[in-house]
Length: 255
Image (cartoon, rainbow, N blue to C red):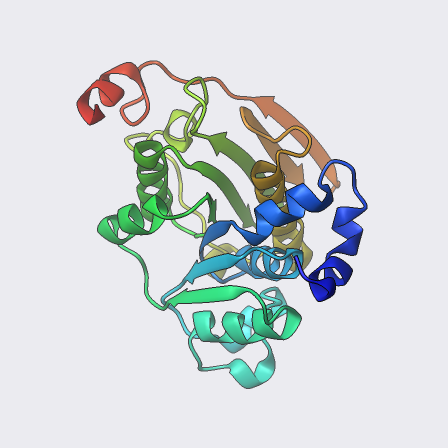
């Protein structure tokens, strides 16, 4: 690190759990962020501010006026422009040292497989089960840690699936792809603006912990928030041996 970096990241360096060694790990890390919306906004801002060396951000939508109520990486003049471009501009203002790669489209399963392969941590800030399951499959295949978040109305949840660990559950263990789950989107159901900030910020924090080795992550736990009562629940998760993505049969096929 040069003198400017020592000053910029001094408050991290002062933390014994991070220090110079941990900050250098961040500077040499690559994070993949799927989605530049309500969750992706605080993720992008905090990862850039924290000094991630490289951040790839994916989103196929343009900034809409309805987004500005909660998607804090975007500003009014950006309405109508690609979200990845808007996010990149804001992140560069916070920290011009970070290399930001735009993927301005809704990524396919094939795209995700390729993107995940070359990253150190994946943060899923998407809003649909198809993308979430595609991201999960890629993370299982490449053994990459996945930080998953969701938020709608006043309800939020966040979990870590550290797929570097053979005993870790995956997203499919929690929400099987062939299960019957109602997909609720904030465009239809509405969303409390600060909720996405709370959940997205926790996702960023978990990613930084995974990369630096600081503290204990949420791996194997689902954290659920009711923002109306501001009550949290922590639910322990277990690996499903019959999981079609990370279970023994699936691993035998992948191997």
